[in-house]
Image (tube, rainbow, N blue to C red; front, side):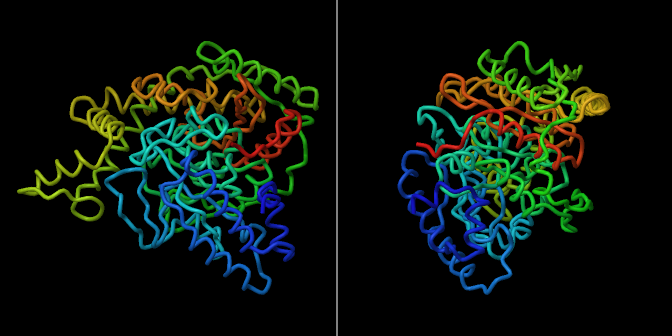
Length: 480
C-alpha cells in the first residue's frame, strides 16, 4: 500500500486502467493513510471510507471504458455539493445539510468519482489559514504547529499528507494557490468560467472558481481536463472548447516572454520568498525564456478593492441562510427573532465581519463611494493585465508573501491575514488563470511561485509551470 501512495495521480490512473492496480487497492491505501494521519492533520470535516470503497468497486467492475483519471481517490472541498454527503462549508449553519445533487465539476469528473471525504476549509471560504472553520483548524503537514493556508487548507493538507492523490479546492482571492504554496503542492485557478460553478456554494459569485490541487503539474493538467467544460446550468460558464491540457506540457519555456511583476517583489514580501522567486526567474532565463520586469501600476489597490467587492457579494449570497429553507434553525418567538438568533449562532466571527462590511458598502448613500469605486479599480486592474500581456506571454510573482505561519499568529489581526492574499487577488479580479508551483524552501518550508496568463491560456501556464517544476529541484514528499 505504501508504494501506491508514492505514485502521482497520473501514474496511479495508468496502473488502474491497465488493471495492474485495482481501484479498490488505491481506495484502501487512501483510507489507511487518512486513518493514520488525520488525528494530527485534521484535513477533513467528513470522511467517507465506506463510500470510497463502494465507488472503487464500481470502477473495478467496469469492463474498460475508463477515463484517464477514473479510480484515483479525490478529496473534495466542503463547499462543493455532494449528493447524500453532508456539505457544511465549514459552518455550523450547514452542519447537517445534505445536498440533493452533485456539483457540476464532480459530474464532469464522471460517475466513477472515488471521493475520500469533504475537506476542511475556512467558513464559507472566508480566510487564509483554515482557522475560521467551525470544525477546528487544519494543520500544515510540513510543520503541525503551522497553518496550511486557506481557505482550501484542508484540500492542500490532504494532498501534502497523502490522504488521497489530489483534491479540488475553490479560489476566490487565492484560496487554491495560497494553501498550495504553503503546503508545497501545485494549485491552479483556471480562467473564470472555465469550470462550472453550479453546485458550488457561493462566496463571491464574480470571483469564485473551482481548481485542482495536486502533487505535480501533470496531475493538475489531468484534473483540469476532468472537471473543465461548458455547463448550461451555470450562466457564467464559458462556452469555449476544452483543449488537451497534457499535449503541450513538455514544451518548455524557450522563446517565451516572462515578466517578473515588480509590484509583487517589494515591501511586505519575505526576503526568503523573494530570493526563491528571483532564482526561478534566473533558471527560466537559462532555460531559454526572455525574462523582463513587468508592471501592474494599480496592484496596490487590488487588496482594498477586493475587500469591498467580495464582502458585498457575501452579504447578498449569505442572506439565503435564514433558518427558513435549509440548514440550522434556532427556535424563537416570531420570525424576525428566529432570523436573528439563527444567524447569530450559525455564523462565525469572520463570516459576520464580512457580511457587515458588505452590507455597509451596499447601503444607501455609500454604494457609489465604496462598491462603485471598487469596481472602477477592478477595471483598472484588468487594463493593467491587458497591457502587461501585450508585452509578455506570462507573468511571474510570489504566490504568498510569507511561508506558512504559526497557528494563532494572525487570527486576531484581520488586516495581517488579508495581506496573505496580496499577490493572488489581482488574478481573481481580472478573471485570468494562475498557478502556484513549489519553487524551493525558505526557513525549511515551501515557497510557491505564481505564473499568470491571459484568459484561457491554461495550456501555456501549465507548460511553463512544468518547466518551473524541472528547474526548481523541488520534489513532492509526503508529510508528515
